[in-house]
Length: 287
Image (cartoon, rainbow, N blue to C red; front, side, top):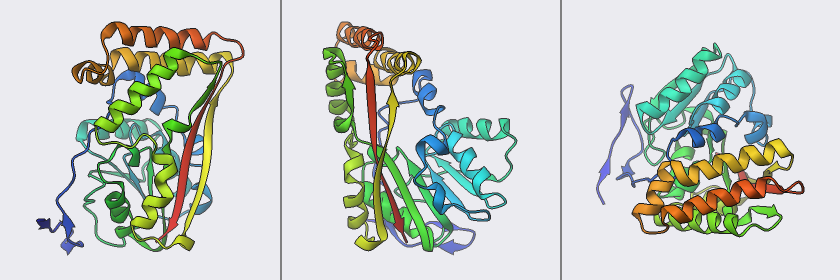
């Protein structure tokens, strides 16, 4: 396989194989961003916070709209955070968030986690939230994250595990939503059960077993407002986002079926005893 050298500031990084191709199943419809903008370091990276300190340098891989990025930047200031995304258009979402909060210690770069354009040993902390489930080669991604992490620094990742999602009461339409999403994500080369695989991927990437700490945490939606918010965004994502277009284009569902799934989501949300648990796997790896 062909290899390439990436030069940054006159330095040559470790040779890397050709970059695998990613397909981001969710896309960036408003219904997706509505969910992503609710994420904070407190509700989405609590496992990482004890490893942060003022003055540390952080690489935030796949930063999305930048709400977690901004929190990380505040935690390490005057240290710097470098936030990456796969395109300028997506990266601008994070730039706008950081600017709106008046945060000045964040830098931005377009980058693919399979082939990060940074020298070896560049960052104290390398972080990815809900990224590895979408990449073509999670082990290669973790190898790259490890390469750009300073010796003794930490590589951290958190990913959902759709097979571990649980809800009450039973809702056949939500069952169908899960079946369709898992089928599409897998078809796109993703890993909807990534949460349970993180430790295994880290070991395959070369981290020693004793240097990998695995944990889990959840988002829970149980109040009336929480259930409706969660159901509405998934109903919209099922019928209005690029995910809906992919379902139809791939022949996995018709519009009528997707509308029925969306209606079922909203019907479930009106159940006063409703409860939904979104489980995530987490790893902190010492480089």
